Image (cartoon, rainbow, N blue to C red):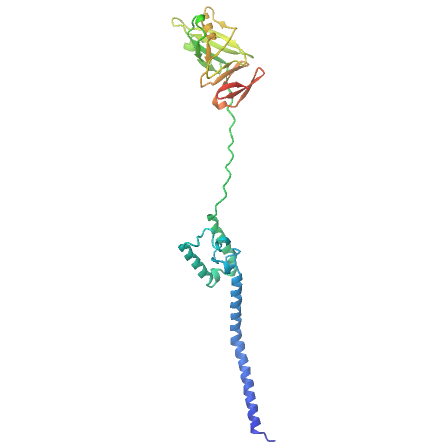
Length: 303
């Protein structure tokens, strides 16, 4: 059997094309498919980058002027305290965009995004003004307890009744007994007063000044509710005067008008004791003989 030379030539040509096609196919698989795959990934990354939010501030990268820094929508995605019209801030914005266009994007590895976001938010916190804290309510302290005195002393130079009344300032108020616990004026009446405790009314001890001899001594009870004010003078009005025999001059002192001293405040008689009203006790109340009194401005005021 004889073969035509033209037929043999055509077969050889076809065989060469087939071999070339096979070789090209191998080359495509090993070289071009990997390149195309990488290009496809780049395109996909770019699309996702535009739609994504690198700094997690809920503003898409495409619209975010500060894509790598957590910001606010009212400032185009930049921190609220950045003045983007300021030249120095504009440089920071450019650096931020340059960082976004680098690899890795914003310098953030995928599994570190959450950590970076938390750090950025923490950095922004000091710039935010803290809400004003309400001031603690000031608690007013209770008024001081009322101080009590068991007896008081008046002192002056007795004169004739037709020249009365005169004004005088209380000599002293004693938490115990004048003439025993508290020395009387010049000590002349010490041990001479009646020290009977009272369940009603209050004792007033009197020392009358005598230039040539020891002071005359006397005392009287005043009714519950009697007030010796701090400002102004008030009559004692007693009718139960007691005195040491032959020492009647001190009786005139009970017809004078008297006032108290600042260290005691106004005094009110109640069941054997004088109650002092000082500034520290302002607001305290006291029931006396069925009536209510309030300590106000160092004076006893009937309610």
